Image (tube, rainbow over all chains, first blue to last red; front, top):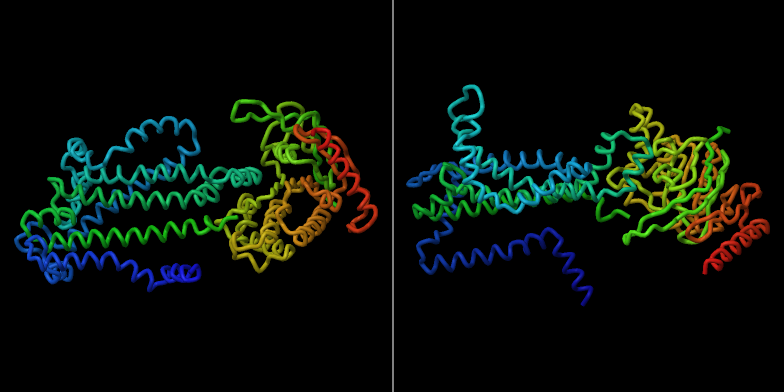
Length: 290
Length: 256
């Protein structure tokens, strides 16, 4: 019995196992979708309608005041990359500093703990009041081509702010946790060798904390993605996958709604797989350290 | 033979604070000297403060009373003392060659010279084939050899070793003991070696210091005047082994 179980577990780790097991629940969803189509409900588009949208991503949807699926995805990803990157770029150095400096930690601790539980979405109205409808285009200097201006004009600062908010805290806290988990013996080894602070940071602290940082980034990824899609539904947004999903619902173009949901899910899955590999690569030594 | 530094402790006391806020002494009135170029072993029952003693000499802790001197000066961590513990402290995210090369990175050695030195050290230690591996891919013995490689690369002429071979099987431990003696002789090292194995202490040491149970005090000092290489089956070896074993047992009995 044990042997059978062990070989089943091995199969689950194989490519075919992962493919089949991973397809199980989506297959059930497809079956449920098919049954809903059969029932004749108006809100459920057919497979054909949805795949037509997915297969023609550059087509501008008629009767729907939104851009093409490809453009919408591009805008969503652009906002995501900017907000997420800003979150990581600010969180990692600050987390490194706070973990190594007690004074900085004491100053930041109450602020972090108060701000952290605040859902970024609820900050959007406040951020809109603070930043207005300013965008990256409105704050950058110099003339740009009209199409570039059009794109950057849709990357609103208020939205970038809440995306930054969503990404910052998981990465900051995981950075701090990672730095503090670096074994004292490693730091003492460097101390005894007479290593400079910069070398200790490069050779010990950053690599030692990297698995935790990567883990925090993976969590931040999920949070930021969720926040972004929700934020694109807010008034003032003119593009994005979330915007397309919402407007399609209003105009009863449900094939676009479903297509947008599939795209959201697939991008979420792909980015998670990417960061999972990053996390595993950064921490290849962790589970095997002895 | 190049002369290394020597260690000198005088009435050293070290206390630690427990979770409940009580002060517990790990060492009390410890006084001894370790001569330059010699290998001195420290033995004693568990809790006698052997590891604390090494940390004081390395400069990682400061005594609460008494003086610790390394070549006449108070110890500071970056003074060029090598330190090796039971846990290898190899960086698991660095390959073997990068672990050995760490002291060269600290010194800013040019890449070509650094690679040459790493190669020479790894050949001498028998780990030349393992340079591209990570520490977790090595056996316990290979990890210790890599740690020794890093010590050699550091250029330190005084080594503090805290039960470095205790987690290894006898055969591997004996191989590494012989290797340590060879390296110490070639480089003229001054070594302070903590061990709970009296056999290991008699095999390696020029002098053995016996500590009492905690708080540790020096209760006896033995000068081992057996020529190297030492034979574990010889009567002299057996006599020292027996004498020190009895002394430690009496120390344990005294403290109950």
